[in-house]
Image (tube, rainbow, N blue to C red; front, side, top):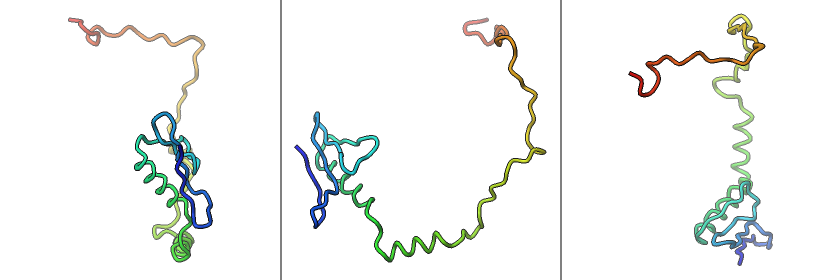
Length: 113
């Protein structure tokens, strides 16, 4: 059993397929494949995903393009490279032998008195 949502021209927008007790959204393709046990809930989410995938209306699209073209009021991000003068230097080098941890102090052992 399957359920399909189509636009006025008949183009497939969403498809739910019943499989093993749940409804899987097979169109639009999602990763991971989403599924729901209830058909009404599955329809709701399928419609939501279709609405999210639609392009904005021309007015909204123009506003988004205009806002994205303008610089941020706080300016661009600093994107500075880390300074070698302020970086913490380390002289660590791998050893020749495997690390041998010292014995744990007795006061840290459980049940120690």
